[in-house]
Amino acid sequence: MQETPFCLRVGNLLPYSMTDSNTTAFKNPSTFILQGIPGLEAAHIWISIPFCTMYIIAILGNFTILFIVKTEPSLHGPMYYFLCMLAVTDLVLTTSTLPKSLSIFWFNSREINFSACLTQMYFLHCFLEMESGILLAMALDRYVAICNPLRYSALLTNPVVAKIGLAVMLRGCMVILPIPILARQWPYCRSNIIPQPYCGHIAVVNLACADTRTSSYYGLFVLFCVRGLDVILIAVSYTQILRAIFSLPTKDARLKIFGTCSSHLFVILVFYIPGLFSSLMYRFGHNVPAHFHILFANVYLLIPPMLNPIIYGVRIKEIRSRLLQLLTHEGT
Image (cartoon, rainbow, N blue to C red; front, side, top):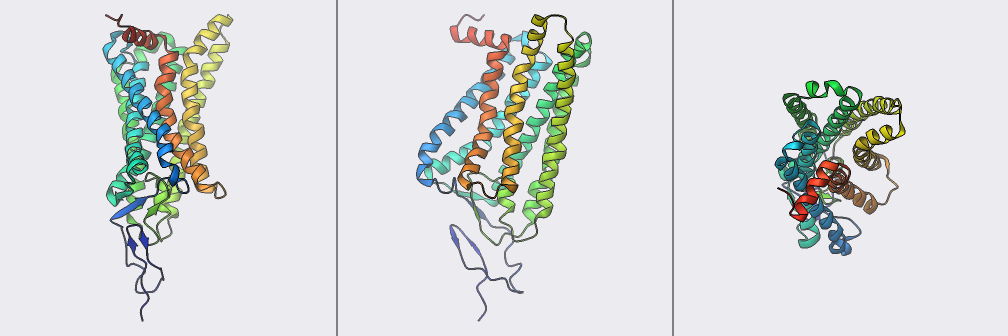
């Protein structure tokens, strides 16, 4: 009697036996099941409260930044245009994952179409790379403003800023495109259950019953050669910036100039350090409890979009002043 092949059922798995006749019996599942946070299903409602709160703060904060820059002509400059790009990226980044996660926590809506899963994966990783590119562009802006201030207006004109933004967008779109393409070609005959509340790259690829080293290696290439290159260029920029700051004659001047960079430095650290930790833990942290890693990965996707508008709103005097005017109805 022929053995029963392993098939994917919604929420149900049949026994698997690999035979010559069924090794290619199943290619792409019609539906994946997002498990949420395994082991903490009973606490999903409580977990959703801080998640939803952070999401609302991120949405309101980034829309506020966009509104302030749009309505205040004095803020129509390169630094603020890059800040708007960062705000838009953060809005898409959070919205690509959080609504589905909340639907799992609140309504137990775990199913996601295979194509929708790959689309979510693409948008998630694409906008992570875009955010990295925008942070690099903002570091370039600070480098020119501090190390070559007399040529700032000539170098960073509006067309140049637009070209930088377009280059960042195209790079993110193109470099991530192979990830869902590779993920689509693998045969999925182990399970259709993704042990987290969104379709992350490695979480999906790990379900394939094939040698997926190509996907894994390409993911590492993006992490180290694309985002890693951004980190190196940011470090070079800030090395030159710090040299320029420490060459200033007075302590007050050094503190004033450093204050203009401190907010950007903090945003960089919030984005890169947890992101690197999360990526490496996913690939190599096999002894880390699954629920800890999944919680950390979800919080990582929320913390930068939530904190970025707060940091810039507090640290940048022009934005802070305009926000206070709006809140107290004293603006013109």
